[in-house]
Length: 283
Length: 283
Image (tube, rainbow over the protein chains, first blue to last red):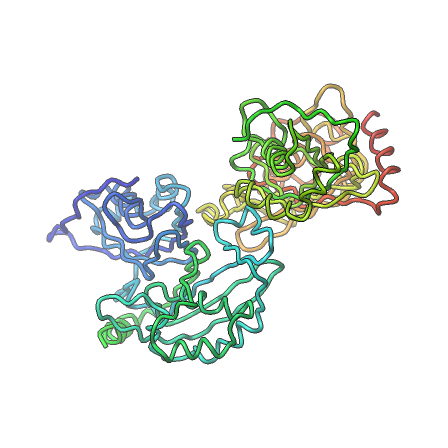
């Protein structure tokens, strides 16, 4: 487990440089992305590894595009970290190799590079794409897929679930499908959602400008009774417009969820996008 | 871990029935298929679960089509188990459900049924198909694939590896690519081998009538220096015909290997096939 250390104090004499990191992880053994005292988290492992590799005193701070919960995986997480210019340049070429040697096998940094001006992993992002994977065979998933495929006891009809999608697309208040937190807006733009089947494996690919807390897992919890015939596709629209959580739509288990991709605009729009995102979040 | 128990003594008054089981497992935490004292093995877990579910005193014996080594996985393993007729019929319909509840999550039985006369999981089989998976990105495999994808440090050329295949196909003595055991024949018929790439994932699909011990992993160990340019494709044919293990062809790690499928003839040829197989093995 990463040790807890004091946050680094930037040296006013040495300018900081912002790095962009592309990250994948198996979330099974993590208490999520965000650092928590006494817990093994992706943020803590990554920050500790980078601090050691760059010989930085105190803990660096890695900010990510999508703060995943305990047990949630990522193939396309993106983070930024501000590091002292001189420390980075002393070892820059060796950093990818040293990250592979330092990080545990359930985290991988696929790319690390100097970010272009105005880049912010969270606020510059245009959209996030997640996948959610289920297995509806009676015998449960292939043991080699059990970390990321959730068993569903009833056969799922992909067409019925896709029939529920159009009424969810676009700008809505997704309060019915979110864990509400301290008065923040739950208005989001759902850009795409599509269910597909490959043998016994059933997968949702879903894209939004951003997702509220537990939003994908809550939506999956709404799709499932539609998929196995307990509800009609129109029911998800009714729940959405009622604006309150419905006890038939449970939050689906974390292990099925993977943050697949974060999309950013061209670099000359990073700052403009940040301004828009910050304004939306404060609605 | 499955406890070690005394092997069941069949009751001469009650006829045995042969069951066919189709099995998948994540081999990571197993010391292979075959029961060994003090080790966690697939055979022991499966036999113990079946004995408990069927209320059989003493340990049932599960015989498999391909005895996988420690760390090797399976999606299409096949086994047979002889069980007392009466014990099976008392609970037959509940067995799939109870196996799912009893077995650990790294083993799954996808089908269990009464075998047709003459069926023998090992000796009736016509062929076995395995896959071997590598990842040649510099950053190593996706953490969610790390259980079954082996990192290779150099870029692999799939066309070069496929160019080495024709000289290996057909009937050969594969002594150069096997761990020899107590004077048994290493003559096998290689029916098909094909390398393919999907992004950073490079996979061999390989089929033979049967494989000797470590044969797929040894062949992979021969393909790799061809794939990354250290050897010419013809070199694998030279090693094959030299008939001795070559120190440039290492046995590739177990975790990349998956027993994907076992093919059987129509039921009316089970006994004939058994006779042929037993004769070949005794060459």
